[in-house]
Every structure is written in structure tokens, then in C-alpha cells.
Image (cartoon, rainbow, N blue to C red; front, side):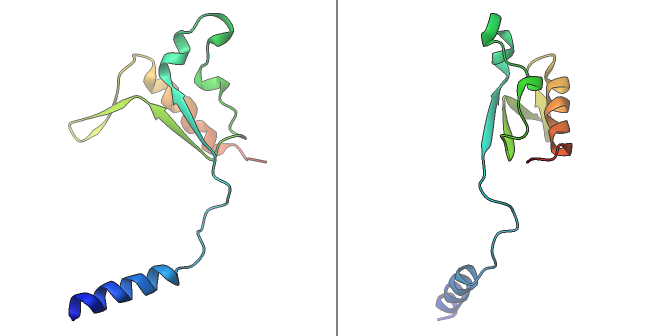
Length: 92
């Protein structure tokens, strides 16, 4: 009986939850770090990401080492820093 009440109260809480606190629509951009190695016009770096198109950016690839984020490529720290600066841009 207690379990049923907990499940019911959780369901009612979720159904009556407030609207999300983030703006819609969401547009995620996937940034693969290997695109920097493409030749010619196919080359794509972090500076080429248009922050006005994305509400968030997913970066490939990273790893967790000793309970913290780590990188694969030698220039990944600079790439992550560049992508991190986009949160300072105002989307229109």
C-alpha cells in the first residue's frame, strides 16, 4: 500500500510539474573532432560552429580518467575552450 502511494504521488507530481525553465526549440549540434583533419572545404574546426544555430553542443570524443574529464587529441583543450566560449554569445 505504501509503495502504491509513493508511486501515485510521484506520478501526480510529474503530471502537475511546472513548465520547463529552458527555451524551446532545442537544437543540438554534434561536433566531431576528426572534422579538423579533412582536406580543403571539408575541414571544420570549433571556430566554424555557428552558436546561433545551437542551443547546446555535444563534443566527440572525451574520456574520464581518475574521475575527471580528459581528451584524446593534443589540441582538444583549445577546442573545448573555444566551444565553451559560445555560451557567452547571445543567440538571436
